[in-house]
Image (cartoon, rainbow, N blue to C red; front, side, top):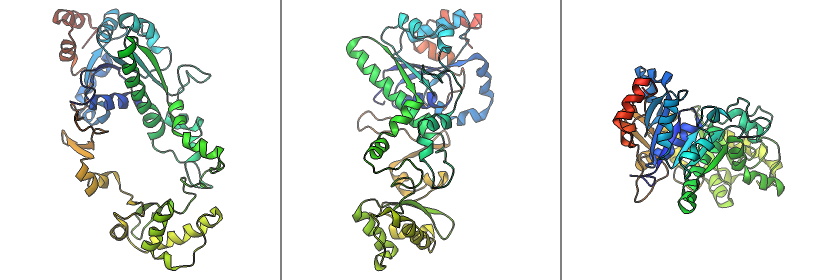
Length: 380
């Protein structure tokens, strides 16, 4: 099942965007073997590991890549793979003897996907960092937040997952498609700084056109405008409003009763603070559910601000099956959706080393070789 069924990918065990990328591809049907370190194989005794949802849909093999036998196990798998995912700092895979040169010597067609924060080269390439640092360097963090307030980190969605995992997934699939025509693999350098910067393309265009100020909280989409904002309700909850277009804004005024008032023109940003204050007062006059009854399903461009738990129970999400219950754990289902090659969760989160024997056998490695590697301590 899934559009990527039949493709094989080796994932070098890591954290954050690498596993997220692997989960996305595995949910779409790719057969992915995750290479975990031997020292991590003891994690199987911790039930909480089954809640590491980004580890779902694939199998784990525990390998000591510091040994010659361990490296040979990985290279044997690489010989059969269409792609590889690794998320270490630059130079780590080379020191392990598993860099692009060694890998392409074994499999010239493989697409070698490299996930880093800063990229494979540059003054900061080898420095430690996290999502918050990558989006800070690219101007993203500066742009998110209200006027006069400290920038607000958008979880780790923009750097790790948006600018990282998704761009690596796109790079791998694109590289694999190209390799089918050329017969040659290549390296994909997926840096989170590059991906996060790419996500800001529209805003750089707006800034060049003079319609976006390089200042936080004063623009159309950053809480500067009153018609693209979040408002508190009488019960301390919140609603989201995105009435950008004139016809949607007209409906917003009608639903709130503000169409009967003599309001200043919305086109002039100088009027936005006054209009925002008026909407703030209006929305505090009713509960979130009351506003839901008034605006839900209208063209106001409205939605209630739901908690993580509430989101799983909303009728629209329930109807679409946006969230699924798998192994008694409620979680987001595979995305996007396909009409014919349906994507689905392939299995629960893998524990380190859980599938060593079966995965190696399934990928064609001999039982005799597996027994030898186990005896030498290369696998567990």
